[in-house]
Image (cartoon, rainbow, N blue to C red):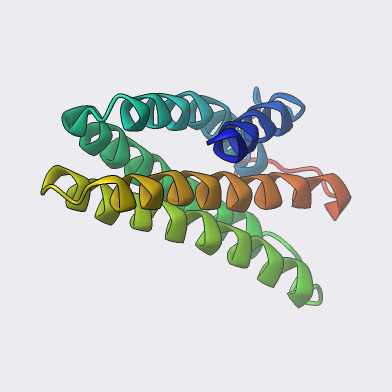
Length: 152
């Protein structure tokens, strides 16, 4: 549980340190990630109280937001020169990792709602961590890309 809370805090702090005011992909990802940290925190609280309805609702919100983040990551990746395939791959890989966490969260939430028990609650926590870790990896890529983003 503490590891999950730490992952959420790390996500929030990482997103907070990025420029969230612009309209380019990096800023949009940072802004979405910053607000998503609160949703993930609420998901964890719902998990602790075993509130199945909130777990389901939050998991849907997370999945929806991750769809937006993946779309922005694709725009970001496409804006990088084709000569830097490694950076493009890192961006897409981190976005996929976060999206995988969100998908696992949605499936785990459905299983909890169906009476999956504490093992499925652990799966929800694990999915929250995976989502946070993927987003942090995505946000950290902007720190060493050396590029300034504008609207695509």
